[in-house]
Image (cartoon, rainbow, N blue to C red):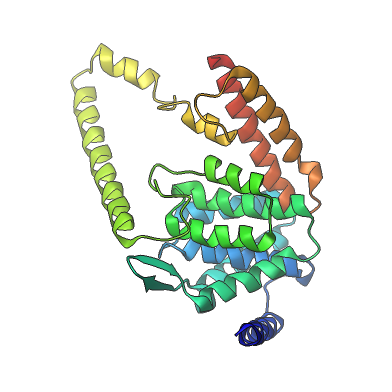
Length: 298
């Protein structure tokens, strides 16, 4: 059995290598080393995991490329490569049903492993963590879905990242849309509820917007002005605790300690690749923002 699995994995790896070598990559070949090609392929799988690629996810990914490559030609090449990988049928995720849940099919799991192996080449632990942060940064634009978490959790497992890192990811990227976020299985019924909740939320927003427009037309009232003044404020501080990997009951000392550890861990100097540096730079900004809000609150 083990020999058969190894043989299948080897054949798939050779097929992917042949596909990679035969593929005509846009732009300067110097920017398409194994790491970056594997990373873009992984990103395409994550973005397609829930069956659709949102415009905001594409814009988020492109913003990283824009900050990473100062040369316009390299920037366009990065955009073109991502577009090419998003269209590739090889990066489509397939699921199989087991009992009452869905899991990633073996063929898709092998594809993820091969892309992760390319992305992993010659990277240290900090850089592997930056790869995972990059995938999460794009996935969490619309809320991390169970399918996206399944893909990224397999990458985390393949990278053999420490248990503390896994625990942090589960806390930091937990989504209200996916209460079973930590579970590496996709339950069809829960995903249907998530879609209905998303549709209902959209209807509520449109209804609220129409009501506000009618009030504005009649001059509005003081309560409306008060709510407008708080429009930029978060509904709760939980999101800032999550960024620091803490529970909402954490003390001021715990907040300070977590902040210091995370700023040191995610310092951009820990990685060499320009794209990963940009990922860590944005991560540190979020950590600083969370700490500043919590420090004032405490």
